[in-house]
Image (cartoon, rainbow, N blue to C red; front, side, top):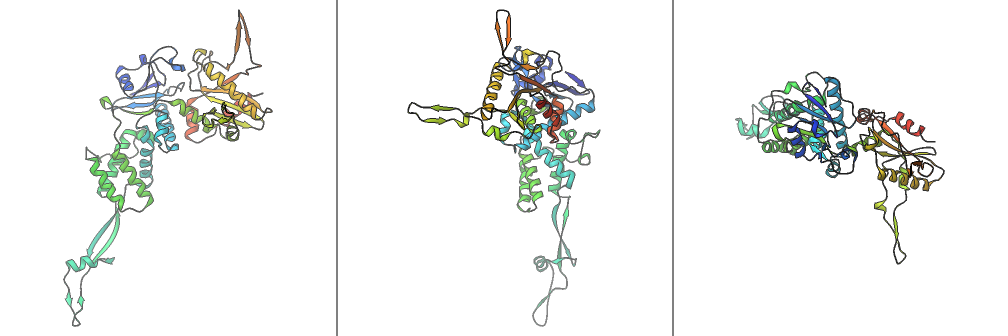
Length: 440
């Protein structure tokens, strides 16, 4: 744990013994505490720990949970940058999946994580276009513009000519202009201010941590959000501009979303299953992947007593990542483990699965050179595992069966660098070269 000003930094998998009791209570409330029993690496020492990446924040304190093995920032500036990158990473994942409820429930989204793309869209629109401008009709006697005959007939006197024709000496004219001094603009400004006050640090790196401080005097002030939403919906019905339609829908979504506020006014944002995001990020930075090989993998099949062969295509093995260059193939299992020593390493099922995947790929083309890999967060420890092997132990003799089961190499990646590359859609060609260089 590290604390800089009012920001406390922890890591995913942290023992509850190191976390303030009131924060532990909130973490239990949202279901991100591992009880110390089970099979994954974070539970092997029977201690309750956190399974969460993201942040909890209130008026005076921010508690940040970085991914496993992520460097702990050494300054406030670096700390804010790390938080922005982490929240940006979670937001980008939500955008990729179109806020699909099933996908987001799979990664265990907690609090407002699903709303992050909405907040970003609202802020980005304001930065680019400013406040909402409503079309306002202005009527004037004898002004310029189109004659409003309805108002003219209703309000102004007329005379009748000798030919019994109605003659008006004055007219009511109408003009349309666009104004930001409307109830719609005020609602827009109040929402921007509320988002900016809570999350401005995410959108900007300036010292104030605010991107729209000029709107700080606009507030929702406990207004009936349903009423405000109905006002926006009425405006939406008469709006035909695509950007404004999208903006109004976003503002309505914001008003109709329940706040993710827990005890003591603390809000929470993050995910409880960062291992799925770890795999997704690696998949993106290691592209292109060998989609053709994945499609050709064998599937389970059963022959019945009648001799009928049934294929179970939906139950075939799922390799995390396959990359290929020429006749060289790398089979990659993305492992989100804090493998600082062998006790926290991938276990027997993980090794067996990789050996079997190698057999499946070689069955497609036995001329391929195949390498097997675990890719893990960078644990800077001399005792971290470098290869997964199978050994036969007889009396005091140990025999490594590498001829039958070729080693699974462990490659370590800095979580901070991976998050940066993922957020910026940057391929990690250096990592890709390093993987292929280890295949003989």
